Length: 155
Image (cartoon, rainbow, N blue to C red; front, side, top):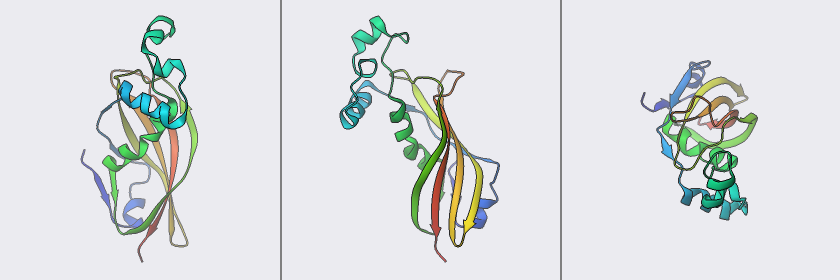
């Protein structure tokens, strides 16, 4: 499934209820986890201490921060959809975020995106996208949420 190209509100609206696409797999490394810990000041051992995690964690290894998984959503979204003819895109919010399964270090993740709804609010388009971050070779997802984007399409 290639990247979906959307050029207008009307084109976007035609995909309501459909899976828009699936991103490629991305490996989550210890280096990435450590950098996220530095950026967020969250150095909990379950994320940053591989030796202790191996001994004491029920997962047997370090795990990515839940919010690290959420923070890479934009990277995955750009692989799924290209929205053209806009003056601006705003991350409006996220609803019903649920962390389901921890992402162990060196796991691969990808995003499946489905258009829940899109509304034209006097020229501004509010899109609600149901997203699931899958973990390769794992039956449970890392997280599920509804992401809300606001697009300002050119007139």
